[in-house]
Length: 379
Image (cartoon, rainbow, N blue to C red; front, top):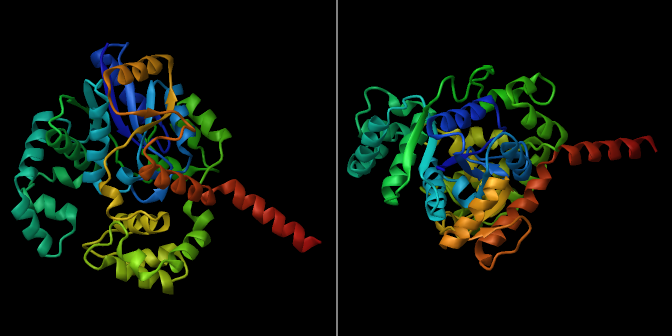
């Protein structure tokens, strides 16, 4: 039996994700075990996940995954490079993963590995490109003379970063790219290759269920959902209360970006207005979103460098239980059950604080609050 790792977010688990699992098992055997390193209550683009981590993990197992582990928030809220490295580090330290599967618009592994090697050897050229005021993504493309535009496509960017991470850790895991069809951030959902962006845009009133496997659609339909606008006032209050020193330590605030964000947070009256005031050609929206979310969660630049202390189990199948026993037997990365308090408390403090603050983005809490206010007005 082969064991394949997937680094994912599943916000939500849709038909494209189901296709990936099907293609993996067609290639390696129907008994292939699937282990997912999944972002928790926050996602890499710097936003709260639309559904909580346990709901999304349970939906993944219902649709064919065997073991879903939480990728720590300190790895999730990184750039593409840090996100990929965190996922590969987690899967490598388990000691049981044979392959890493990921989608790519350009799924030729020799090309992806060649680009990864080229990027690793282009530090001087990359620094030169950054000094010209280019964004990190554009600087990478220029540094390696990417005339084909491979690094302009989002799945390719992550695919190359996964390959770089495998090289960095000297991992024995073999990359297994899957051809990705459709647009990663497409605004309109494609039934054959839906994007998570398009599916989320249809929620809750559109016909979003047709783009999800039935087990996933059912679980998400019955669960609470979350969005930044529901907790915006709480987030603004926390950002305004941060001291200059706290802002200066915030992750993604280098090169004085924290100061610009701090001033905007104390002046503007919405998160969107803050983002618009801070973003630029060099600092794109996603970096600003990660900066603001890290400030809200109290995550510093040093926190992003913390080593992986453990991986929390979010959902597991019967096959997954065997994998957990195998990891423990082999002395791999410590696995923590849901609700369990780990011995390492440094990251656990970040984990619990992040989970507590996530509840403020709840749609049901917002609706309950509005109903209560309406009742008081009537009285």
